[in-house]
Length: 153
Image 1 (cartoon, rainbow, N blue to C red):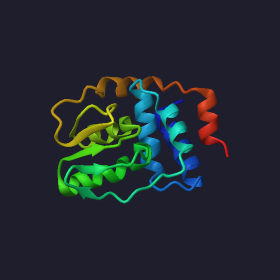
Image 2: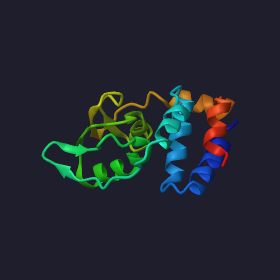
Image 3: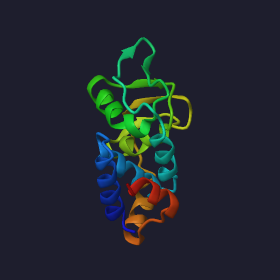
Image 4: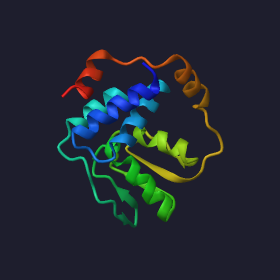
């Protein structure tokens, strides 16, 4: 399946499922898949979570994400960082979902698999360009079971 086809179908399914920012979530999921990360599995886990939103409020330590999945919070995190500068994230769940947004926006990121990490500053390299180009040319492989679970009502 092409990246654009996967993104469109997943975005449509997430929109019909009532998710705000469905387009960004679908884009990030496909981006992760294209770069060799299991975005579908992470999103599938996140979809089982009862809470999918959070009002982001900075405190002296940064942003407490309260273990709500970054699959849902990443777009808002990036808007907050753009508006207010570098932030230390803590109580992070599925932090890998922040990665596609930081690469797209040329923003630095700490280790997104840690339960706490920083986002902000400037990124100087894009180590994912080659993987994305290959995925755009050849398409991406998707786990049929997870794909059906996420895109079938």
